[in-house]
Image (cartoon, rainbow over all chains, first blue to last red; front, top):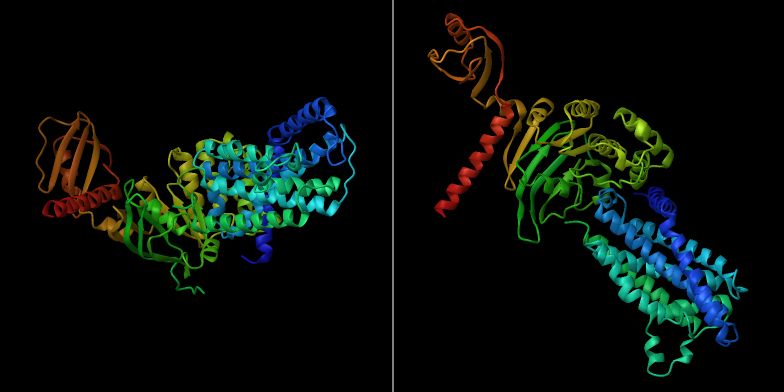
Length: 257
Length: 319
C-alpha cells in the first residue's frame, strides 16, 4: 500500500480504538479517576499532611507527578493488552491480518490508541489533582515528551504481552506481578535518595523510576535521576520493544499458524 | 503484471505441516481461471481451510507457493491481499461493533478512504439485505445475518478473487438462496469465486470447475460437467399409487420397494426410462412423481473419497 493508503489504515485503527475507549468509558476512564482520587485523599491529604516537605515541595505536590505517570503507564498497558488480546480471542484480528496493511501500521495504530487512553486518563488525574493542590508546570516540553515516551514504552510492552497471551489470565499476570511492584518501587511515593544501599542502586534498574522522574522534572523541576539519562532509557525501551513487536508480527507468533 | 490470460489462482506444490506434526497439505497444485466459479470440496480435516488460510496469509506454508493473478502470496503479500476477499468459516468480527462500522473499518484496512468506504458499505449491506441492521450491534444479528455481513465485509475492497469458506453453514434455505443469488451476480460481473461447502447440491448448481481434496492431496480436479458425466449409475425414487410385494423384473434396472407407495429404481445413465414406465404401467402402477435419490455430486464425492481411503488402507496394509 502507498503512503496515503497506509495513513487511511492507521486512522482506521486509531479511530476504532478511540471509539472503543469511549464506548466502555465506565471501564476505561472512570476507575482510574476514582482510584487516584483515593490516593490523593489518603496519601496526599491524610498521611501526606504528617510528612514533611520533599525536595522543597509538599508531599501532595511531590506525589502528583508520580500518580499521574502511574495512571498513564497502567492504562496504556491495560488498553493495548486487553484490546489486542480481545481481537485475537474473537478472531477479529484476522480482519487486519488478511488485509494488505503493513505490520508497522497495525502496531502504530494500536500504540496510538493506547497512548491516547493513557493521555486522557493522565489528564483526568491531573485535573483531579488540582482540586487538592496547586501545580505549575516547570518544563512543558519535557512534561509532554516524558508522558508520550512513558505511555509508548508501556503500550509496546502491553502489545508484546497480548501477542504471547493465550488466555485472559495471561494479560493480567504481568500487570499484577511485574507492573504494579515496579510502579510502587519506582519512586512514585518517595525519593530514591531516601533509600539506603543496596536498595537505591537496585531501584536504579527499574525503568519506571526514570519515567516518573522525567515527568516529575517536567512538572516540578526536580528529579532523582539525570533527565538526559531518563530520556535515553525511555528511547532505548521504545526502540527495543518496537523491534520485538514488529518481529513477532512478522513471524506471526500467536497470530498466524 | 497480470494479463487477461493470467490465471486467477495458481497453487504450486503447496505443503503445510503444522508444529504438532500434522501434514495438512502434501504438495497440492491447482489452477483457477479468471471468472471461474470454482468448488473446493473435501471432508472435514481434508486440508481445505489450511489451503484457504495460506491463500489469505493466515497460515504460513511449509513449502511451495501460490499466485493470485500472477502475484505471489509469499513474496508480495500486501499486493496479493489487495486482490482477495475472504469469507471465513468462523465468525471473526467484533460482535460489539455495528455492521456499518465493521464494513467501513475493513475498507480502511485496505486503505480505502472513508467516504468511498461508507458508500460501498451502504451498497453491499443493502444488496445483502442488512441495511436495516447497519446501526445495530453485530451480536444482535441472527446467524444468517452474520454470515451475510461477512460477505458484505469481504466485498469492501471489491476483490478480483472472492474466497468463501463454507459461507452457508447453518443458514436456512431461503437466506442461502439469496446469498447464492448475490454471489452468482458478483461472479457474473467478473469476480472469480472459490467456494467450499458441505451442501454439494449448491456446488453442483453454481460451480463450473471443481477440485476434491482429501488427506491433503487433490483426488479430483476437473470441470463439473465432466465429473458428473463420469457417474454411470443413477437412482430414482418414484411415488406410485400402489407398489405390489412382488416387483416386475426389468432388464438393466434394479427395482426396490421402499413402502406401499414408494419405489426405487437403479439403472445405468445410458438406460432409457421408457421400459421402466411401460412395465410399471402394464402392472397397473401409476407413477405420480419422480426424483433423483441423491445429489449426483454427493454420490461421486463419497465414491472418490472412499476410493482414496481404500487405496490408502491397502497401501498401508502392504507396507
